[in-house]
Length: 408
Image (tube, rainbow, N blue to C red):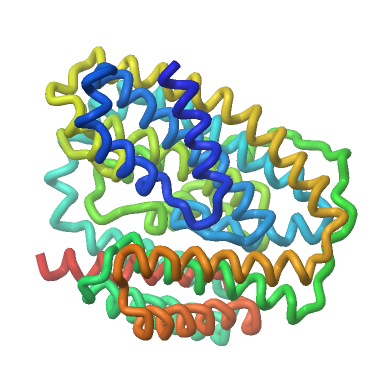
């Protein structure tokens, strides 16, 4: 019952643009004192686990069809959006669904290996975190650049987005609010505005597609699953930094191998969700908002809890896979008869409206965040016009992490 309730909640939070699973988790956690009078801590934690896994799967639907970003789905917007404009929206959803499902299976199967190898390495690696981040970022900038001009733009965008991120993270503004503002501009509004400028139209979405799991896609699933686990032990690494590692492991990029790229990033997003829970048991360090709430609800996190939550995750991801496919098909049918310009403008208004709603809720400074939204949108438009990967805009999170760990 807890698992199914979590799946329902995760489906709702995943489909509603701008709602982060941590926000829903915070509501549940705030109510936990009252709820624990009627239910067990394990019941509440299973609900949170299944909600976070379902959210990680379902949130790709609004990201791909509407261009509404989150930290974990931001990189999938451009290749996914292109597939929608090619009439392959249902295929794109199948790719991210299979990638997310497969990566969780990889993570669960390899858990004993990760538990044996990674914890002893954690303290050894920690002082060199900034070096790993810097070298990986530099390597990816070179690998995704085609010539000196492309290299210049890629490096500039990485540095500028990093300065933008560092600037906004130095303020006392809530990190969730800051991230929502930055990702709305860098990956959401900018992508849709460019599509409008190109007079894009949504063609008929094909019901017929062939999705073959070739070796490159299987490699992407494996890369996503293993990278999600590695993130659990590398302090300062999140989906943004993990996206760089996963791309390098799989050898996929958004331009030349969009299918493998989508598989890799979706796999990373879901595997990171489940492994952040494992970190409570393995190293006593919860690595996500949901995991933090669970660590407070369950005082003594044992191997039995780990097994219960693992099976709950497997049930949730299996049902979420089916729901993702069905909802993706429904979105695909719905989009065909809709005026692209109208739905794009509606999506922009929805994203901005939800952002300002949260600004009011968190008492954020409206003028400052408005300037941050305009700046991030302008910066997010540049890659489209100069022909470089939007992955470089992940410097918004990577550069601040490098600076923090250098100072440590």
